[in-house]
Length: 124
Image (cartoon, rainbow, N blue to C red; front, side, top):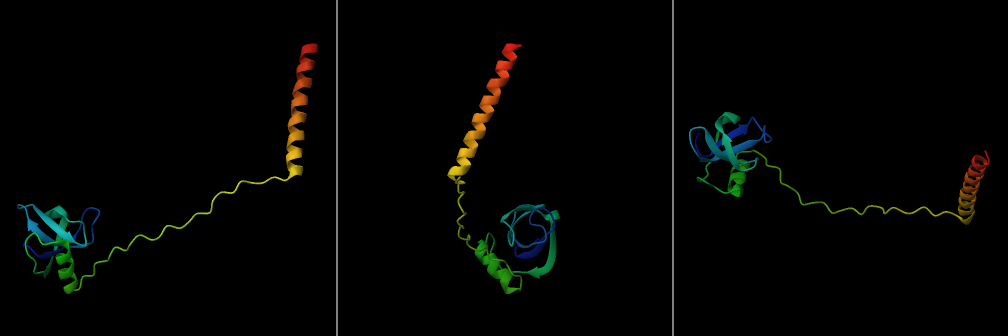
């Protein structure tokens, strides 16, 4: 693996994306950058392409991305966060006076029924 070698990641969360070898660590590991997160990667997880890019060893991400764009590999730019939309607030239900009276009368009726049942139980 040479520095500047263009590859495709074939394993992990960045699989299918283009990258460039930025630094060689040893015979099995390299540092990659480009359309993926800059990180240490096993050579077995890369598919080498016949393209090469001229970059320095330990080049910055911006330089790597410019070099990839020169050879025709597009890198999607991350957009800014979209503005937060306001959610409609919950509105408490408003009851009319008639509905309130109905509820109160139902509650009173239930209380009276309970009292009557208790009295019947006591009589027995």
